[in-house]
Amino acid sequence: MLDEVQRNLVQRYIILTLVRQALEKDFNTLQASSLFCQESLHSFLTERMHEVGREIGALQRALRKQKLTIKKEKNDGFFTKYSYYFKGYEGTFSLLNARLKHDALTYMKRHLFKLETKQ
Image (cartoon, rainbow, N blue to C red; front, side, top):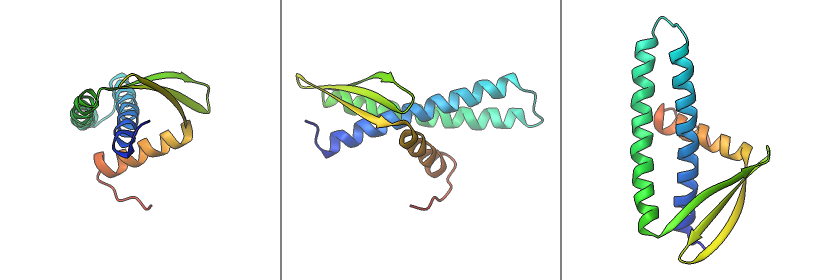
């Protein structure tokens, strides 16, 4: 069983991978469009993707140090199932997709765009 610190690492890793996917999707959409200020938006998104990438790298090192691996199993539209492997033990958990989306958006507002959010 995972303790509180390990659960927080797993949750942050999952949220940050979702944030990175969203930023990459926005980046690709931006490249395909022709906007007036495309260059400044391009550099903004690039900086944010690098910031998230550095944080994911730090989380991956922490997970490796704890000998903890996470794998996304399946997404049924409402829940996403993840499995984890920790010191010979295996476990699974399901997370509500709406909650994942909310947490990813909250992270982006608070940390990437420096906006205050109400809790």
